Image 1 (tube, rainbow, N blue to C red):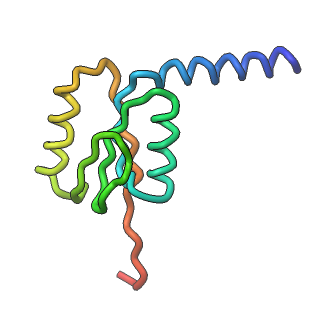
Image 2 (cartoon, rainbow, N blue to C red):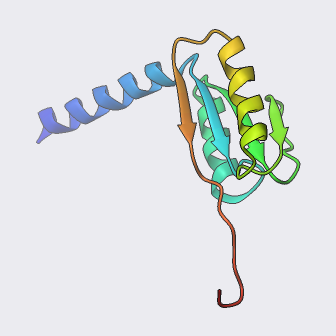
Image 3 (cartoon, one colour):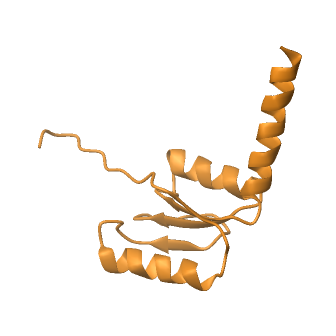
Length: 102
């Protein structure tokens, strides 16, 4: 049992090392789960590019726009490619709330 716990702890340490210096694109980053994800990534050394239709209030690079707009998404990815990071992650968190039937 102790060896299993030790293995799990080592796995967490490796994950932290992989997050360090990772460029992470987080959609829906201005609030809720997206904001929490972006904050956790930043705390573990990742550079976060926040993408949201609403204004993001963090210190990292942010883009405001609609993820359904292909030109907007191209602008975000062009920016990320220019940053020359070896590892880029995409966390698709954006969503819409529909309060009436479609």
